[in-house]
Amino acid sequence: MTLPCPWYECDSRIIAAHQQPATLIELCLSRGIDSHRLLRGTGLFVEDVPKADTLISPAQFLTLIDNAQRLLGADDSSFLFGQRLLPGHHGAASQALALANNLQQALELLGELRALLSPLLTPRLLLDEHHAYLYWLDSCGAGEQQRFLLEANMTAVVAMSRRLGGEHLPWQCHFRQAPPRYIEQYWVNLGEDLHFNRPYNLLRLPREHLTRPWPQTVQSTAQVACQQARAQLHGLGADASLLDTLQRWLFRHVRQAPNLDHAAAAFAMSPATLKRKLHKHGTSYQEQHDQIRMLVALYLYQLKGYSNDEVASHLRFHDATNFRRSFKRWTGLAPSTLLALLRG
Image 1 (spheres, rainbow, N blue to C red):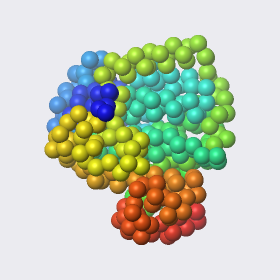
Image 2 (cartoon, rainbow, N blue to C red):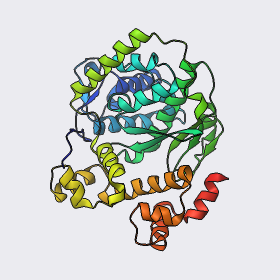
Image 3 (spheres, rainbow, N blue to C red):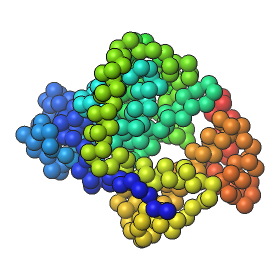
Image 4 (cartoon, one colour):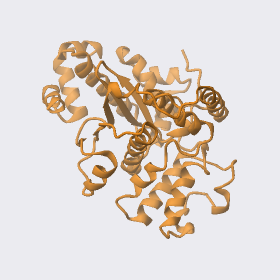
């Protein structure tokens, strides 16, 4: 069965220049960066940025981020950008976030409206009995800009929860990367419960904080804002990126161990075309498939208490030994070693 929904790709013009890109541009200009150098290679001109109909692609936005990082040369750039992102200035989508009943509703809206509010990284919310987990997955082939985006987007969520909820929450932050040399910026913006060299990028929070009422809710206005935001999303013509759509398809079909041919058929294209599109995004089908299998395995271990044999069976491995070998290739660690690290 083919997928019914369209998606956007790294060269699709779906990002309003006057929203997140303008926020980054204003930050750079406030620090004395020359606008011509900042916009070099982006296809943007300063006079076009404020126009409501100026749209840029994820690739153009990533070029802008690369230029900004290089020209600013400051350790706090991504965090300052993140402080400005949410609820942000995205019209109805931002208003819907700002009027959310509680943090859970805000995070669910962030996921639903991700093409508007987080077009370069996909937030994925999972809950267990005790915690909420907000995973971040690459949407458009961020490459060297992924660290900047993770710092900015995690900061955005932490800052939004403090701003709208009126309290500091005990967020725990996990990163795939090694500890940075500018760790003090993480302490200031994300707190001190930081964990590096982990197999995923996520924010974790005790679940009881999700449903505490936020004071600024106006129910009727919030409902109208949500309706308008969904109409805005519909107007884009795509509610998710190609990588996001593939990742979600893989999550749904992980037990069938689908190969490239199966995925290509679901996406109504040839295997060669899907392979080429993924290469354009700096990835491959095997890399995406392995990433999803790793996340599902960790979910089954941590949240469901599955054994090696049960996880191997769920993921359609022939035996636990073969699974353990693959798991070590995905994460660099044997399952027992990684679980001991995560529980420590």
